[in-house]
Amino acid sequence: MPEKNEDRRIQRTRKLLQDALLALILEKGYEDVTVQDVIDRANVGRSTFYAHFQDKESLFLSEFETMRTLFERHLLSQPATDTSPWSLSLVIFKHAQDNLQLYTALAGKQGGSLALTHLQTYLSALLRTHLKQQSTKKDNPPVPPEILAHYLVSAFMSLLTWWLDNNRPYSAERMNEMFRQLTQPGVESILQ
Amino acid sequence: MPEKNEDRRIQRTRKLLQDALLALILEKGYEDVTVQDVIDRANVGRSTFYAHFQDKESLFLSEFETMRTLFERHLLSQPATDTSPWSLSLVIFKHAQDNLQLYTALAGKQGGSLALTHLQTYLSALLRTHLKQQSTKKDNPPVPPEILAHYLVSAFMSLLTWWLDNNRPYSAERMNEMFRQLTQPGVESILQ
DNA sequence: ACGTTATCGAACATAATGTTTTATAACGTT
DNA sequence: AACGTTATAAAACATTATGTTCGATAACGT
Image (cartoon, rainbow over all chains, first blue to last red; front, side):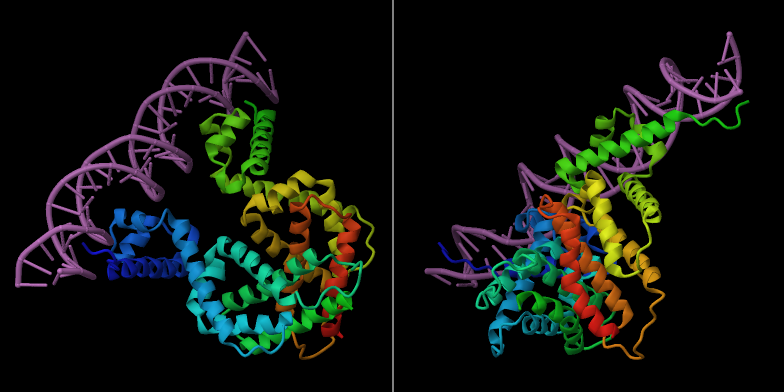
């Protein structure tokens, strides 16, 4: 009896479904894509879909996990320069440029708000660990850290999504410079 | 034959439906509210609903229009201080405080992304007209005006939604001060 | 009191979801 | 190469929500 039957079909079908959803999102937007659309595009049976994923949202979130895994591998392979938010943001801008279709489908205007919500949560956590060294210099900062993080992540995501939705007329480096110029003065005036 | 039969039932039914949706959004979130939920709560017949609104989204957008109308009336009644983005943002923070339930249902986390998208578009336009006096001092600004506006509106909305979703632990004035401290240095460094 | 019309309620068609079942085909193992 | 195992396909099905239609009723303005 085969105990470890690592059927390659499983991986293949998973990827077929993920790729189909990705393409369909770019075509008609996440909201308008039905499960029927996905299985037709992927040439996968209905029951097979539900053997892999609970629903459309589960499939979508598996794409998000793919992006997250790819990104974390990329982040670890980067030479650690400093821990400032603006070196982190540059890494993300560049990673988005290297995985354009995935990022556009997830974080672009076609992707709906689901991934954006998760991205916000994920980046907030990432920012916190990145900033844990530089503890608050001020005892009573004029802007509480929670709001500061929320603001900084939102500001970053606004540039990222604008960039993805407007065919990236500027380089990743240029976008990151804009982000720095907009946010660094205010943030540093608060952190001293 | 009555030519101008301004039936008060029409206005009343409209409001019943709007109020029902508003309450239901706060209870279970926009996505989870069905048309059936709305008409049950409002005690309105199914066919009557569709005589008033095309679908759930139309009803929701009519709420957004209500907010917009209320806000513009409020804006005109304000003594015109200056045209800076941060005096405009203060007006919005205060108006949100005065119309808490409406703003929370539309712009809060329960409201979905629909209203947020419209709000972003609306505020961007509003910001442009507010800023039309102060033309760009620099010929070639490091950050194009389009991105600047997008950033500023996103940053503002991030504070507004955070505020609404966290039971407003600070006053409207305090929130606006935070917004100013975070964004003004960066924006002015760009506009000279 | 009258004609008008908004509303109700029920019935209906449609479309998408998620489940179940059976036969088939692809897989890893021996 | 033949085996047992298991992922898959396809069809049938129940369920749920949407949006439409129609006739009777009640509320409205005149």
